[in-house]
Amino acid sequence: MTAHNRDDFRHFFSENVRWGDCDMLGHVNNTLYVRYIESARVAYTHDVLDASLSGNVQSCWILADLHCRFRAQVHFPESLSIGSRIVRVGNSSALMQGNIFCADNTEPAFTSAATLVWFNMAEQRPERVPDDIRARILDFEGSVEGL
Image 1 (tube, rainbow, N blue to C red):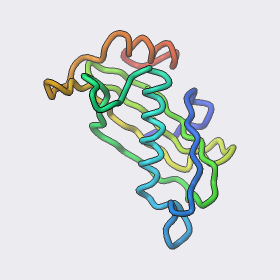
Image 2: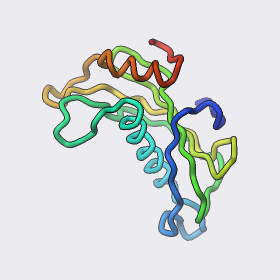
Image 3: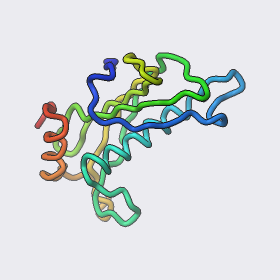
Image 4: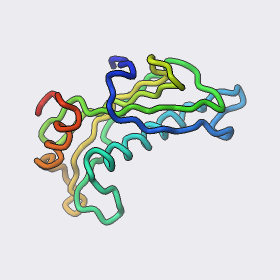
């Protein structure tokens, strides 16, 4: 998984570390990083793709695989900036990178790569990523492998 700096991302989601996010050693518990990335992924889906993730949606992204790397400790009361970007689109899947940055740091404290699958909820099967979603990704990102 390649670490990308802040300048490689166009979409950001802000989050503040809460006191309860930290463990007894005073740093953010490892499970919370995945939650922060999840919130950023949902924001990207809403902001960039104009796609709903409500309970009655017919088709949407589902998370199929997630890889992550912890690069630095994060402590309360840090302000986080979480970058998300889609770097590859296949027939029914996409690869989304997500990085967590502290304050104004250009190097990430956490990196992730998520494989998303466009999924038909009624039929319970993957389906081709719709053309309008592909167009929105390309329009926002500028250059994406597979598009």
